[in-house]
Length: 289
Image (cartoon, rainbow, N blue to C red; front, side, top):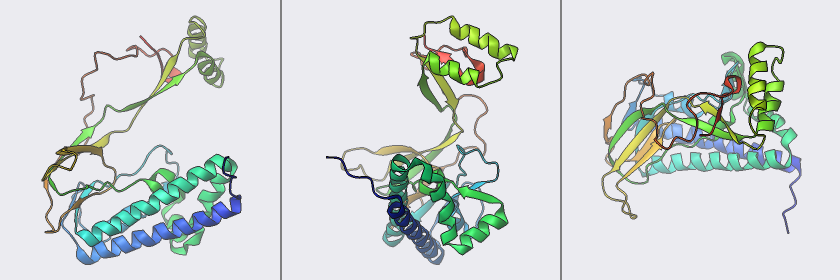
C-alpha cells in the first residue's frame, strides 16, 4: 500500500517551518562562531567576523546567474564540541528542506516555483537584502548543500583543484534529433548535424557531455585511523570544512594555486568510452567507441 500524497497546503506549511528552522540554526551557529572566533583559514585570505554568517545565508540566485552555478566559500574551521554540534544542526535543517522540496517536486511539480518565492517573504530582513543586492529567487543547490564535516581529528589537509570533471548523460538518436529540431534548422551547421545523425543506426546510444566548473578537492589525513581502518578521505568542498579540534588548532594545510589550471591536469583514461571528436557540436553529443 502506497502512502497518500499529502495536500499541498500542508507541505508548504511544513516547508515554511523547516526554512524558519534553517535560518534559526544558521544564526545560532554563526553567533557561536563569532563569540568564539576559533582558528580559521580562508582561501580568499580575508578576515572579518561576519563572513561565516554571510556565507551560510547565501542561498539566492543573483540576477542572470546560471542555475547550475554556485558561489563557493572555501575555508577550514577548527571546532570544539559545542560549535561542531551547531554546525551539525545546520546540516540537519538543510537535509530536512532538501527532502521536503523533493517531495513537493514529485507530488506537486507545478508548486515548486511558488515554494521558492514564498520563503524569503517569511523573513523581512532577507527580503530586504534580496532587493538591495539585486538578488532573485531561492537557489536550491545553495540552500541545501551541506557543510563538509570531518568525523575525526585531522593531522593535515591537502587542497587541490579538480578541473577535469564532467557529467555524461546517455541520450537516444531520437532525443538528439528532437533537440536539434528545436534549434535553427535553416542554419547550415544544423542541417549538417541532422544529416550526420540520420546516417547512424537509430538504436545507437549517444552521450551528451557537460564539462563541470573546477572544484576544490580536499584530501584529509586523520590523526588516528578510523574504526574501519581508513586513514584518509577525499571530498569536494564548496563550503567551509569543519574539523574537530578541542585545542583550537588547525591541521597543516597544503594550499593550492589561487586559480585552477587552464588545461586538463589528469591523463585521459585508456579505457575512455567516448570518441575524442564531438559528433554533434551544437549539443555536445559524442558517439561511443
